[in-house]
Image 1 (cartoon, rainbow, N blue to C red):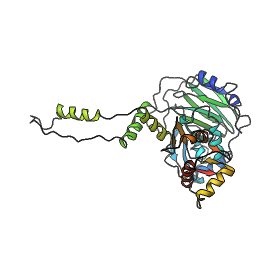
Image 2 (image 1 turned 120 degrees about the vertical axis):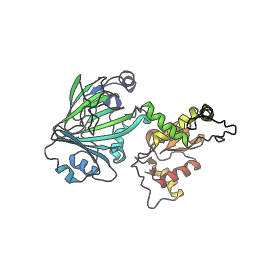
Image 3 (image 1 turned 135 degrees about the vertical axis):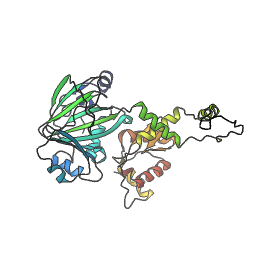
Image 4 (image 1 turned 90 degrees about the horizontal axis):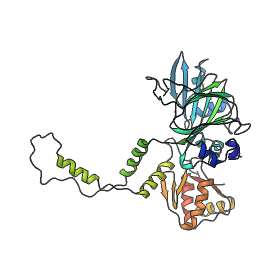
Length: 378
């Protein structure tokens, strides 16, 4: 069970939090989740090492040996950690919500923020003194303390110059203005661009729930890639009235003007932007592989199981909607008006209880999703 949002937010309602803190200023909440020590399957160093030594995990090991920073990417082997000796180190595990259902449940407990903004749950395990140095992020983040203690120093500095030549983006002149020691169950919210540095006090584990805040340049590049598969321009470049030019290496004004006119025919509207966001925000991460059932149920048996027990989305599946338009795992999907309410419920709650009303067409579509590993009967 998740704590009520008011407990998670230190007595604030979601509306108060959004109005006063979201993307505006940090918030420290003592005992946001009382007694929190981690999620099922990830509560100790051994749990962490088990996960980062698997192929499907996206992980990094950050260490400081003799004053120098080193970053290695997983998967790892147990001996990789033994060689570090007494030097400070931390191991970061991305996408825990894609690996553990309890990790997914923890992340979904923050659904007072739209799922369209959600990125992932990252967990860091550090020995005493371990950390990744003072830095800033381009996303909103809730830093929930699991086992142990971590000291956070933060600042709203404008100087974002980095130390050159390092494998990490570490601020050259970090000037913290506030400092807190977080205990298990405590949580710190930080808006994008707030400089921060977290240092382990003894061994500790921190759970980071991150929300996308992509730069405009990144969105523009992704949108242009989306367009390239959907734009069709008629005609081709032609110059039957080509005039002799004195410099053969010169790009003529006439050529520039003709190409400008051709490109000016590229058009998009709000529906194009909507579909771009729907597909981009549900696109699976590169390492995601769906587990298809080895012996899938027939369409009839699938419908019977769903009617009797309900169904739920796979933890790796993202289903979003905009009005009457639905998007799942990077693709658009069409359903009749009678199924809109039920599919919105599935997107919001990520499962449907037994007896949910679905048309034959919707059940056909969901059976395909089931065979692809996107969802399963309960």
